[in-house]
Image 1 (cartoon, one colour):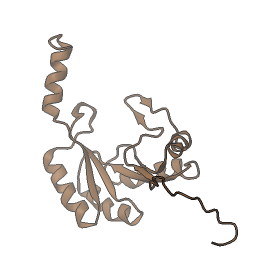
Image 2 (tube, rainbow, N blue to C red):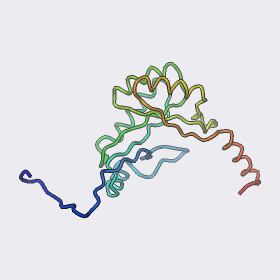
Image 3 (cartoon, rainbow, N blue to C red):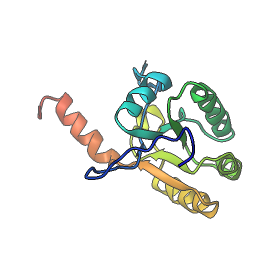
Image 4 (cartoon, one colour):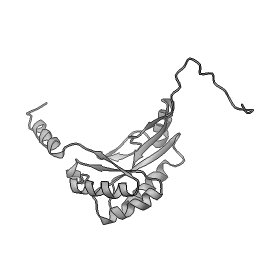
Amino acid sequence: VETGDQVIDAEGKLVWPGVIDAHTHMALPMKGTTSSDSFFTGTRAAAHGGVTTIIDFTEMASGSALAKAFAARKKQAMGTCAIDFGLHVCIQGWSKRTADQIPRLIDKGVTSFKMFTVYRERGLMSEDGEIFEALQAISKHGGTVTAHCESAGLVDAYTARVLAGKDK
């Protein structure tokens, strides 16, 4: 033990490693509002609960705007987080321009990209073929794709039923 180190006797206790919360929304604009926690308040609360790392999201972007969305969100988090953080880059639509951004983003430390299978009316939904192309392209560079993966058809049908008063 070096001078200044503190030794904590954990005999008879459970010692847990830090927790990673891989799905957070810190000050994220959504549906005309913004989530209530800032990167500072949310990560401070997380640290009190044993969370050592969060992975938040960029705002939805397409094509060359992916890098811009990543840079803006990273700037917002830098210097304000009480713990470590990473970012999932949200993809709105798939194209060659989008695919061209992937290697550069992975070089900047991005490891995951998020796509949606719902919210067509808000322009967030990716078609199955786009998701398939993204899975192939992103995995080729060592990244992964996460998905908000509900069935758009079922969600739309049930929403219509509720709005028509058929289900409550």
